[in-house]
Image (cartoon, rainbow, N blue to C red):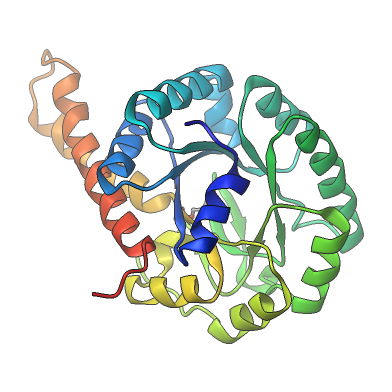
Length: 282
Ligand code: 13P
């Protein structure tokens, strides 16, 4: 079943778990992420930035997600990650994405509210869910760097006002994580997350999931995280495996021989993360 973000996050809420939102950077990775979710018997969120969506083609991404959701009987949401431009969001919605993120976090609060409301109005008319962000997450994504001085944790009271005015389906929070952090792990600000979770009743989203210590995953889920974004870990896994395959295989070998080992790496990472996102202590 091809579903909206709202639907899978409601399910996560009722089970006190998080749904993995995995960034795909090419069309090869996508089916393997869905196969891994099928093995783990959970819904899955596939996400792409605007760059990847334009490179692969929005309709191609929608077609693969829909057809695999049906074939495997897995709930799949296709989500546009970190879009700032309304036209990019409209393009994704018109092509059939079931969820979008409007990222107005670098704008003033007023501009962020106005931009988010515009997206919510368009998305809701098409049955599409909306995630927005308040506060500023650090790190690097798609080549865009947010320096340490610019990081701003989400303010709980501002978040209440923001959610009431925009009527979004999920809120991305800045609580100490950083995009693209893979050489080290971060210290999540649990007390800030707790304060936010106490005043809001919508699903919360963690960005920069690669940099979250695996031992902290259950803790953030208990404090309201329902969508858990992981991108860089897949990218690093793919790139390293790919480098070693291309270096060691003959140049006239089928390309498949270089790609299949990368898919195995992706499958293993996604299944390991999903097991943690189920938040079962045994
Ligand atoms: P990482 O790439 O750091 O895992 O973060 C993913 C993310 O938050 C996508 O928006």
